[in-house]
Image 1 (cartoon, rainbow, N blue to C red):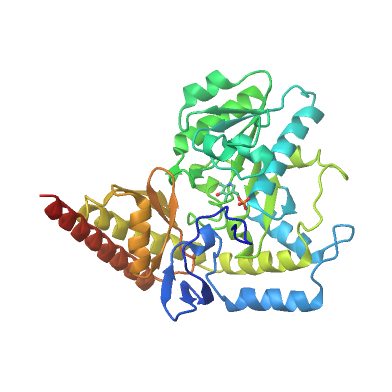
Image 2: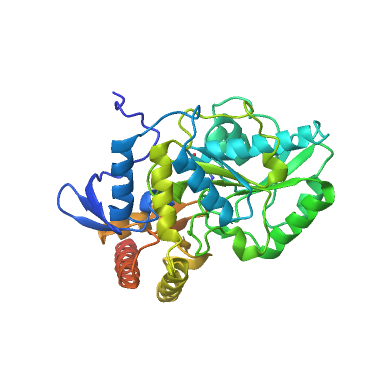
Amino acid sequence: MISALMPTFNRADLAFERGEGAWLYAADGRRFLDFGAGIAVNALGHGHPHLVRAIAEQAARVMHVSNLYRIPEAETLAERLVAHSFADSVFFCNSGAEANEGMVKMIRRAQAKSGHPERTRLLCFNGAFHGRTLGMLAATGNPAYLDGFGTPLDGFDHVPFNNMNAVRAAITAETAGIMIEPVQGESGVKPADPRFLQELRAACDEFGLFLGFDEVQTGMGRTGRLFAYEWSGVTPDVMSLAKGIGGGFPFGAILATEAVAVHMTPGSHGSTFGGNPLACAAGNAVMDVLEGEGFLARVQAVSGGLARGLDGLVTRHPTVFSERRGIGFLLGVKCVLPVAAVQAAAAAEGLLCVTAGDNVLRLVPPLVVSEAECDEAVAMLDRAAASLEALATREQEAAL
Ligand SMILES: *Cc1c(COP(=O)(O)O)cnc(C)c1O
């Protein structure tokens, strides 16, 4: 019989009772170092006192009022995001897919309202992940995700990642913009070449296209800068955020320049829940921490240490790992053995990680994780790799 909870996920048989910082505690008393962080969501870890208090206090004051009224918490958060980014204006929503849908709508509308209604198509990349709505399934373009859901929504063209000739060849009179993840997360932690991003910007300027960055995973300090685009020296016209922005509270945002946002007039887009006082209280609390003196510099330093630790791991266990990838706390280790086996062996040692495409083990710890905890994670992966090596040796001996 089917489970009451629809079986769309292969869930590990683990349930957690509480969390503290980078640690999760299972109902049976075991504790785990959480380098999955709810898939790069729990930026402040678990039970962060400032975030917990902000949410509790806001819930007691007023949780939701609708966007029919002014929401001071939303105005404050929007001003802060504008102050720290290329953007002039912000729309709040509830998830990554929804933020990307809004980003595509804004790009299309800005083209339509500035004399180019024929420019409706978005150029996307092989290996992209933009979410699971009908629109974002088409933008993602992964056949496995599209299976059984009918004709993909029209309007998305795909080209190879990091290939500028392919991009230029694919631009047509109907192209409205380009949508890209500065680091492809789900498909294997693959950073875009900074030069490629610069050339995308130049092509957008040349052809009158809008550049949209999907920073749902890379944004909010994940890569060691507040936004990943800062590493490339390129600014997009529109950017989507979600995952870390609420620190675990479901939340998303679309940031845009005035040239794009000016066309989003009253009635052009909406959300019942988007940017309600409770979500914005969470968002402001996350921003308080990320804005703190030296916070992002610390993320860079600690994540750099973790990356070096993983490099050492790859050197020590060439039959288990082949390569370390990524930036900041968006790191991946490409596995030689099946990544599911490596993930299970890590969990057996007390380390939770997530997988990504291309047989990659993804490490996305809370941004507040300590150097000692990163060392512990590497030690756990060392033991996990050693146990997999021992298993492989036993299997080889048994086969002789
Ligand atoms: C997770 C993710 C999404 C989808 O976010 P949801 O909140 O699950 O809808 C979109 N884009 C990127 C880059 C992501 O990592």
